Image (cartoon, rainbow, N blue to C red; front, side, top):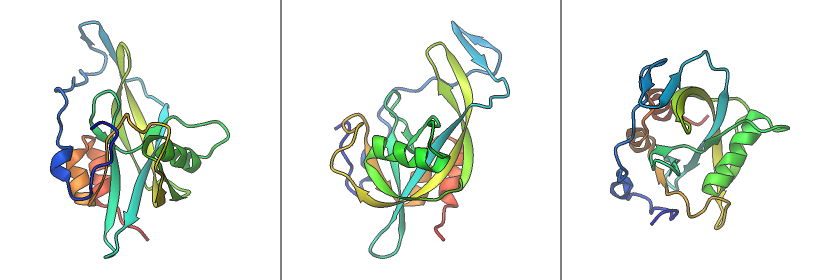
Length: 175
């Protein structure tokens, strides 16, 4: 079932089926051979919060699963040369979920998360840009490697792990 779009309203199908994920140990400590650093990181990522309006005018947001752990996330990645943060977020949304639309030029919020690297964890900050989806393509670069689903914001907020992202999704409103 990996990589297939889930039908609307089938939130039960999106329950976690992955192994219990490793928690990041306290900063500066060793956990086996894993080194954790919490230097004041200036490394940032960008993300898109794809949304659409239903025929009844309700808002739905798109969640995808991460490729490695299967946890629920929004499309995100590293800033790209020659692209603004908004443009890079829109590109990530296309590559990871096959969605295209109009992106807001300014971030609607930010959150932090622990990025699991090969032998370390790194605390990263993520700027989030709203993306009003106009089209979901039938084919895209990462199709087949993720699950995706459209959910009401309150349902999506229950599935993500990062507290600030939960709050951002719960409070998300279009203007």
